[in-house]
Length: 159
Image (cartoon, rainbow, N blue to C red; front, side):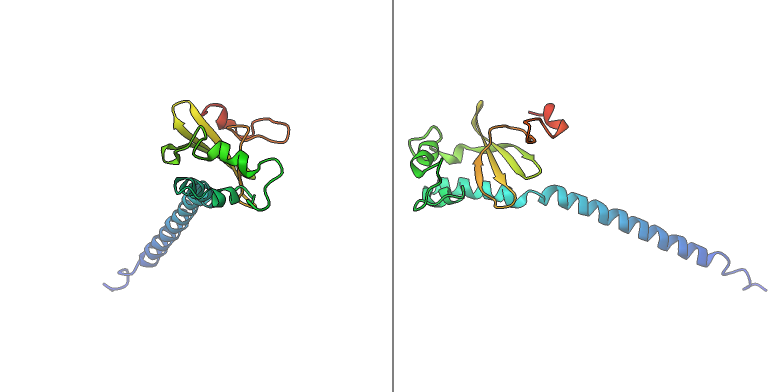
């Protein structure tokens, strides 16, 4: 009769151990997924601005102009190559792209806004469209809807 109660509760302990493993595994997978989404959601758009700055540092202005969705042979109607060079070329207000660093990135619904800071108070806001990954100037430093209202509540507090 000594072996009759030896296995009492063993199956319950195994079941409890397996349930804990599954719960921790699922919670861990969800946290890793949220963490990855938070860091990688805007990766391609941030990489586009980084590529743009690298092209400016290398003085490859034609390639940098193409990132705006324009081509030197077929310039954009409202932003031709001459205007681009006035904004980003060697005689522009920001001739040295190596001095630029990203001060803030705001993730909007249709794209991102990256605020480049050249010196304290000297900032340029760039917008990168998610669909086509084209760069352009952002008129706002925060996300807005069609009527011009701020769409992200926290942007009110963190300029």
